[in-house]
Length: 62
Image 1 (tube, rainbow, N blue to C red):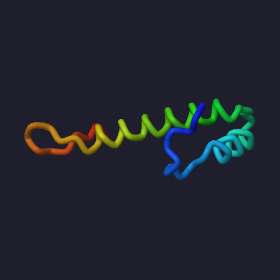
Image 2: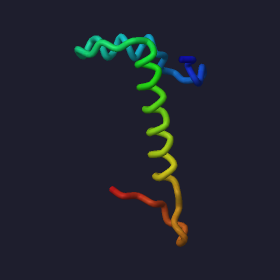
Image 3: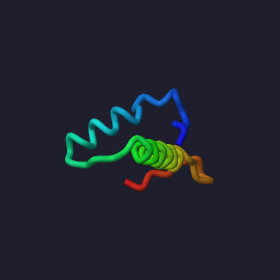
């Protein structure tokens, strides 16, 4: 699998190292998938957080 975004600050090798330090062994491909998911999830969370409702108030759930 090709790493989708070379501009990301966390590379698969770094993710593999961090996960291994915490007792999880993953392959390079698995690390890419994990990072893709995390970045997508993060983008969705940011989008929801800054989306404004019809009244112009920020949509905050906390």
